[in-house]
Length: 557
Image (cartoon, rainbow, N blue to C red):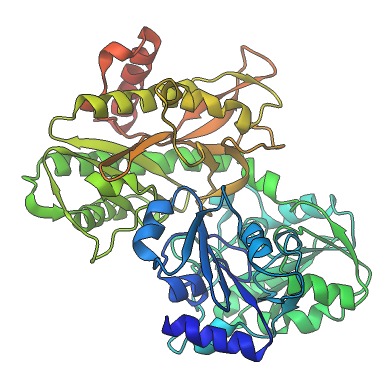
């Protein structure tokens, strides 16, 4: 309450009736540095999707289905809690603020489509009130910018830049999505936890040259020379508003990723703004042959680590010596021995028993519990390798599973197999396939409150667009070269969670021109103890047997 009271005092001084607090940073990232964790500082929420609204007499917190249970544990009941699919922040604001009451927002943290929904007087703040109160706020990341070698990227940055530049509908392209910039320029960094991006803003010209706004202290002399020699002008990111304020002509932006402050600065300078989807999104998603081979190679390393972990886990007495945290650390230790391993791709979700039902459970020293016989253990983990990014979930029975647990696991598995074996025509979107993974749960009145699949980057972001598999409507068809997750699940609050996740590459089917399918690239055995064999058809049994045989063959087990 002390933080909220102090915040309300600052709001009152500025004549605000409400303050919008998203969980994001100046680059509209999902993975944000500790310095940008304003929502966590205020509310205690540690998940990756959240939003708070503070008024003079109320406070509301919003998140999606992945984090509802986690928010109940981490965010005070002083806040009104909402599933964002049932009530959005702007709906709540409309219901709780009169037409003349002013809403404050940080223009670095909002885009035009996000903000326009709030039909109340909006005030762009010159500084973020939380930053004024956050006395021990961490410093900005200072990790060096690195070049991503051609042997892993598969295409030079010069070729990428010319490919994108020729598609522009304006004199310049303003890019603020750090993963798009990293892909385009073949650069990597460590400015966000487990995500090898560089905090930067880029202006690409129609001739393929570019201005890169970045903390120049992160750029070593030899790297600076290479970037300059290949068409880059590097400018300290502290100068970005001054530079943009002097622009002229036309500039293409993606309104969904461009902060309002940059958009407003260009408008004030008289720049003609062309609003288009980020032209790097689709090329980045369509992995080239080098990136696809790299992804398969990364999954070999990942599979070896996971098999070693499963063997280790089953050898433990589980009498209190092994906990969620120690198990996650052991899996990390196995991964670290893998060829070209750089980092985890996210904090391992290591959920035992009821914690497994918290979809994106974040184990801490405070929440950590021992693994014991007689319950399910859900482990969702991944690695960042120079050749690719991995993400895999397995559910393990520590002892004899119940009939209900076997039934639910088998239904999740049947949905997973149905999606993995799907054959679909060119032009099909993930939304059209989502039902395949849910159908067997729906038959008994069950479902899961998250998407079935997300795109995955190439030694980049864990959650990559524009492709996905979910109930949400999409205009992006699945295309060869895309990598997606396949992760149906079932969660019984207060008891256990089940999820089976593999990564798949979309592939063309030579014997069926115009049709595509999936190649499963994750190599991690399933827990056969959890499968109710009588509920599988012959085709499903064959898939399980073939998958395990493929794992043994490739990993040489």
